Length: 261
Length: 238
Image 1: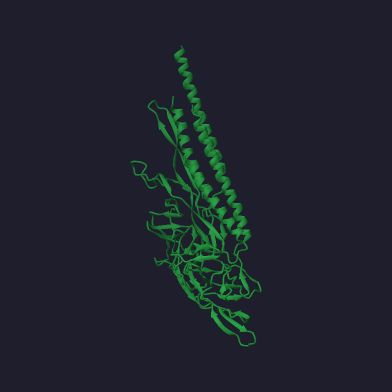
Image 2: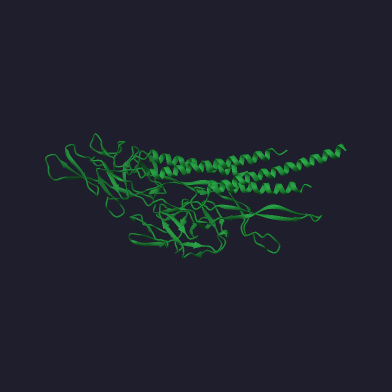
């Protein structure tokens, strides 16, 4: 009896759905977190009676066959790349990207990771680093005697040294963009890695065509909408229950059959 | 004498298949643009040698309920819902396939693809390419795809004379052996996704009905068995 295994695929799918939703809700307050959504597709079909086959010598054609579906599968867990809200933090090294693009971060392995979470800090040597201490490329060092740090919309880092009036340019923050940013691989800690699906990174200056602008003293919030998540959670739970009901019924039918004398 | 048994059996085996169809409907209640399958039963008339007319149950086919599912707002620019019984055209390794599941995304070459990575075709027969530096994508109700720099293509949207002639090919795709026709009346809604048209109440009540019918058929078989046993007893003890 297929109904048992079909309902099992349904329950597994809803279980994954709840896992994705709970991860979204758990990351509600994670800087620049992008909510995910599970995508489902129907599994393959078995032909019990093929449509278009002839049903008599006179050439009568069966108008619709019997195609028995085998359940549901998860096609993808898709990341929704919509912009999160921007909130003011009054912290000079908090940077938010308004529009497209990612900050480039150098991992200890030398690889480049990409991130939209711009809650940066300063290393003991004055370099701009992420909360985990990874260098933000292309490596900008703030002089020790800096009185004020300004990052403008196009990513230029300007420093006013104590006792001086004119700010001096100490570096330029570059952004990376991808043909298909949904294809990036999440590696945790707000970092993403390039994949074959994302395409290679194109770097550019904030504000350039195809890149967003940088906003100082702001952070991008997650784009999780609690109302959407909770409604999805309710729907997933009901769908799960229905599938378990199918298993119950199929089991009762099998029980009836097994009581044959 | 044993005809009643076989008739009940024919009913039971179709009910088992109907249960599979219902299970598949419920399992796909979260699959975008999934269309409910309904089993069609017919009576198969058989005349025996002694002129007795018997009717067996037979499942003649599956009819797809092509009613449009509800549209849900997702706010994702590449989510498209299609209204008016039309289909998007997808180029798969197995040939042209058609879909109403408009949850599309871009691939590494900025081409519009399904979640399987198959190309969604434009009217020109080629892919829809969104330039990587585009700030936004606007998809008009008639399927015209444009960015701030102008039109980049128009989605190929088709319809069929007989939706039932399409075969489900899994992965939200349909295969067609009949020719596709242009669908000028189709309306594409950007940022929305068509839900499945599974009605939980209908599915659950049909399922209960199937269960009870199955049990009833079982009782006929049991009764037949009793009759046969009694007959044997009467004859052997006489």
